[in-house]
Amino acid sequence: MKVEDILHARLHNQLISNHSAKTPAEIISGMVAIQAQDYLGAKWSIGLRYPGLTDSDIDQAIISKSIIRTWPMRGTLHFVSAIDARWMLRLLTPRIISGSAGRHRQLELDEATLNKSMDLLIRAMEGGKQLMRNEVYQILEDNGIPTTGQRGIHIINYLAQKQILCHGVHNEKQATYTLFDEWITESKNIEGEEALAELAYRYFAGHGPATINDFIWWTGLKISDAKNGLNAVKDRLQSFEVNKKIYWTSTNLPDQVKKNSAYLLPGFDEYMLGYADRSLSLDPMFSNRIVPGNNGVFMPTIVINGKVEGTWKRILKTDKVVIEIFPFYKLTASKIKSITKEAKKYGSFLDKTVTLEVR
Image (cartoon, rainbow, N blue to C red; front, side, top):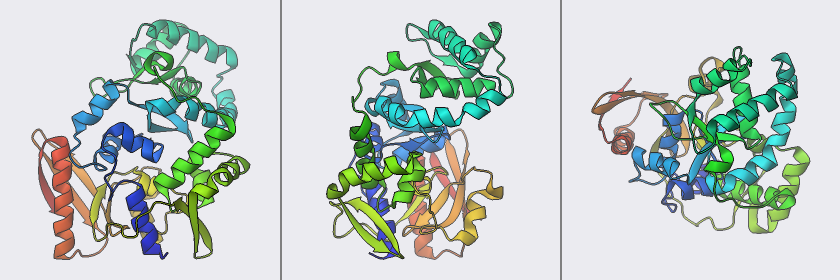
């Protein structure tokens, strides 16, 4: 394989150029998880992977509890299939919780405070109640638990990682929180070595070709656990070497994958965030254009033939969306035509007309 083959294979395995999964739950399950701190962007991450899905379809998948938003990896919000949430949290969050101990001490969040918070919120949410963040904070404040200085969000994150809370349905563009055990009614029950193997296979099948370092970074696993997971499924994967790095991917990659396409990806899409090393798809000289000021906020990207060739932003209006594109280089007429086609798909996703403006 060459670098360009890796990129097209990733587009295929990530369901960007290959639309074999048809529902939000199938799409997310095929990729294990989709990063989701940008709620609107994350919904487009799902929608672009099966043309015809709409923004309201993603909302309905959340309402029907087939997908949920929680913190399984790296302390970062992801969409996961509801059936996978429990085993993934059980496998991945103990290390995150342990790593947060120092920050909890700084915030004076001791075990007694966290346990009291848990008891208060369980009582407040029992019976299927969903509370917005300000309502959660008010309950804590009313019972002598300050939420200022990031204490509140750290309490919520901790309780989500302990499988007490998860996100519910968005309310007036705000996140809500609800009880995990009431929201998740069916779970895949695996743990230990079986869970490591499941995670490894599905990552490399859904994100590959990728390296073991990519897998370690993406999951936040210990190096030894990540290697054990990969070793357990090597016979179900194929590997090859490019530029002195070993890449792993599924064995069912077709001989020919779709090429010569343009895509408008949201800022935190897995195509960018799914790997420790992004240099294959993004020329390092443009890194600051993707993450201005290295502030951790990823701009939406224009991807053409697997390479990032610019950024874009949306301006939402009542009945239309304006898409401004900021290419790194002068675009050919054929590339603009391909981008315009993708822009129209985004408009259909939002049920809005589209205006494209080149900057």
